Amino acid sequence: MKTDMVKKKQGKWILVILVFLILGAVYLKTAGHGPDEMIIITREAVSESSQDEALVRLAAEAVMPVEMDASEEAPDPRISLNQADKKQLMTLPMIGEVRARAIIDYRTEHGPFSDIADIMNVSGIGKGIFERIKDKIRL
Image (cartoon, rainbow, N blue to C red; front, side, top):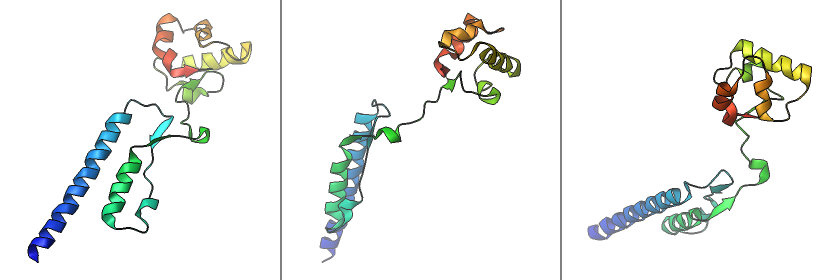
């Protein structure tokens, strides 16, 4: 009687470990994927069956990557040269209050930027600063 209980507990622990191993493998498999894919584990699998079967089903569903809806797309973290205010521009490396004000003044005087490299036309911003911020800005 006692050995049956011990075997049952061992079986559940083995199953839990198996689930974690599968989830770990899924993480490693999808680590290189971009933000357009994600893993979904549904709770629906837990309905109408035993816990053991539900755990196995959850683990099996976890290995299926699904594409995200366009509405769930992550926002672009880059700063918009044509829309950013002074505070947002100041989050860029080497862009303090004076340069942020110069960017806004340039934009006001010449209209929206048509290329990110046009920021080098702003007084006080040359190739060196552009090289440091080019991956952090967008139109």
